[in-house]
Length: 366
Length: 228
Image 1 (tube, rainbow over the protein chains, first blue to last red):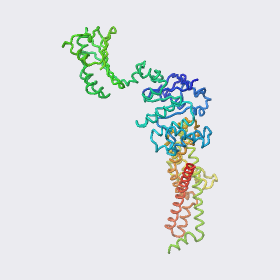
Image 2: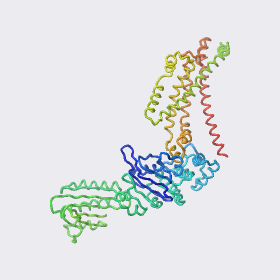
Image 3: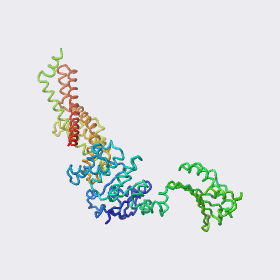
Image 4: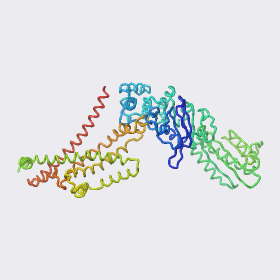
């Protein structure tokens, strides 16, 4: 049976549509990681699953209970769902122990002794038993976040929602929080996690959702999403692709401006001097090769796209030139007339050529 | 005239001290009732100020702006000579009404900003654990807001006690009036003013002391539980 079922969920803020007809089914024991760029609605989607945002349309089921029903006993259903925030939000006027025992005592009817015993077991699990009388403000971010997780666990939830649990932590504390989450995963907890920690996502997820265009854009196993995403937008996000596009329509185009743009593009994304120079050189040679030899008529229509893969650190030049078929890479002789081709052949890692009927398409990896 | 004579003449002769105590009782009565009613009304205004309905919010904000913006003496005179004129209500009760209004506007502001200063996400976190809106407010927001509001609230009370010294304008014989009367009768105004100042000062510190004791008691309770 499904743990969480979302049907045709839509949500907008004013005129801003965030989610549109989103469907999702999460089974018991699944660990779903939601990724996507900032503002794609992944947090809103997660918050909807605990009805912290009221959907405009659609239904949400937690187990057999419909959360979005008007008759739903929200307070009872929410006990089954644990929510962990980016900024912890521990009750600041209570010590650690009270933070953890408050809900079990007041809502589950446990005695103080029972609740404290339960809290101590949980604190022991995360190695913070010695801090049980500390106030939240004296604890580090990582400790606070682990206690926030334990505060949810004390209610014995069936599913845990994590909204960027490590985004507000400094790097030295991310590890301890992720370790606690791994522990939960090991115990078979159903988890839905919104995160930017890609390595962690790949390791812990049973399913990865990439969110874009108001919904789940692509989903699959971690291998499918991280190693072989099917859609371009997913690939762009996973590889953190950066693009520079340029259009040439006349023979006397502004080469200096193009070179300047390539240079600032390279600087912006931290490409080294040598690579930036090669990028400029190859682009220039390729353009002039096509302008001088690849054109039968006067009309010039060349499109250039330079892309930089921030994850794998590779740079690709793509060039499309309209006109008759002309493949510069077929030229064998290393004569001085086609010096540009020679340079390209020696600097590029990979050269591809294709003719699609009206344009010469070249793809060069540096 | 030496100091003993002055003290005898002003505070003892003709049961002066009894008159002073009577005046003090009136001041305490007006202050206490105004604090109680003003605080209750302030809570209601604060709740309205936080209403989901816009018009209610606006009305509450308007009330606060008007009452806080008008001098308390004019408020008192308007109550006495216009609103409750001929109603048969005693002057003291009219004063209580006027000071309650004054107090309510200040406490409403005090509570409102204290609540705003708390982390609303903690309330949300409580809701995700399964607490009702009411429980989350009582258990999470209120204790934190009370701590933030405490200081401002205490000074609001002390300021109110001091402001009650103007009730003489509407025929009430309060502490200030009594002090003034004795001062003129015995030709010792300076001494009596000093006596009056000391009594007001005493009331202020009793007020602060009560809050301090309450705070210490709650801390003690926490500590004791920890030892168990």
